[in-house]
Image (cartoon, rainbow, N blue to C red; front, top):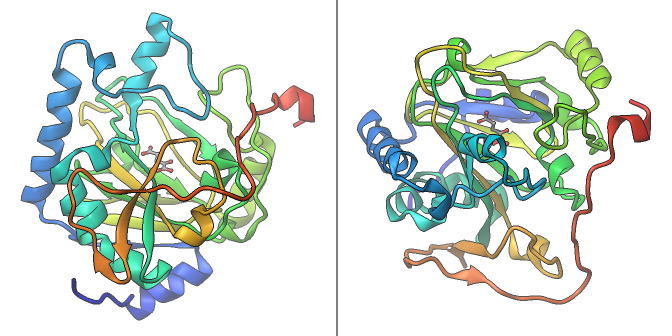
Length: 287
Ligand SMILES: O=C(O)CCC(=O)C(=O)O
């Protein structure tokens, strides 16, 4: 595995803005292959049998509307696809994982964000650690575009510098699809810090701190916007926590890339357990 170093600009953005972008982490052809694998799953009949789980943070019920919502996201899927796993999470992104997390790295979470043409739902403003509710600020988060991700089809938006805030209590509004940052605070942060649209081409990546405030709007365009995300953590952070979203696959062990497939999961237990409870409603906390 090759070493990786941020450019001066990336290093500065990481500290000051809380995120940076990288171009062409995988080729456009590799991105197209991965998109094909994901579309095969989306287009397979009875997709509820093949891992289109509800967001585990807030199960959305089993009504037809709720099932349709699940298409916005496959949770914890990337390590079950050998192509995606070896190309990205334990592939092109592993040198960055080593640079930021050290020689022992686990994948805490992975998702596919589907955001289909014309119907793709918004992801509300949130901090990833505001959804995890485990107090962790150190994991390293990334999102790779497989389709072009542009303003027109609902690219990610970030509030630069918002990674320096505390982990804010996330709440539910009547129309929330999962916990979200209090809407009044988001409006105030947008005014004080501004918002940046993260436009990416297939194979480009954005990386961010776990406390970063981010969002994506609905997709009103005819262009779909598939992207894959991952969160890296370490055995030290994972140890002693129950892992409510399932096991954490090993990515690097003693600096060596884990090439096993199926993946090998970190299994050590002990210490304090973490099991997130329900989010309070906005009315309950008065926001
Ligand atoms: O793809 C999106 O629209 C949302 C992604 C996101 O919020 C995340 O990966 O944490």
